[in-house]
Image (cartoon, rainbow, N blue to C red; front, side, top):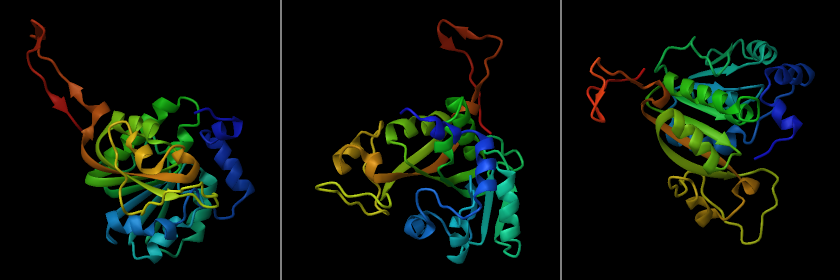
Length: 259
């Protein structure tokens, strides 16, 4: 997919500082909380510790707390928006706002969240410079802060062929794909509908989705990738050979280290 100049700016932190300084009005990317609530409730419990990455000035997290969620931590790279959100929700103990780069969340301990929710942050990073490297760093960090069996819920305009390759390169996930119709999109002839809480059949490369919903998926739906953490980060696995090394094409000893 090619991006014009505006889309490429989404990967630049300075763009967001300027945007939030110019327009402080609340804005929800892709979908709001009421539209996604059935899916959120399917995978999360009210006492789940939740991290929302790239929160911006969305009211999504407010909606979660109103729906009974007790601990929602929000991060964004923009200091402008974080200061504004801290002030706005200063009297709400269930909502926390921290200025942080999602590619380096070292302030959080490993395995400290039950769920991570991402509405467009990975998409924005994939628009910018060094997109492959930065997206891998981001997903690797998400995998690190998630508990085992924790879920990364990625709401994206990205088609499975591209997003799955990034997700599978970084962590060991069990991935389910859900879809939700975009707002304000005219339905095509013979439009297929799909229940949000019902996963779409998903094969290795994501091509199976066309059989269920037809071509040009991204024109009509947002994809919701529900990734359950099943193991350590692939990119952090380390192979350590003994002094004997490899003999006769065989590995003498192999140690694999996770987090």
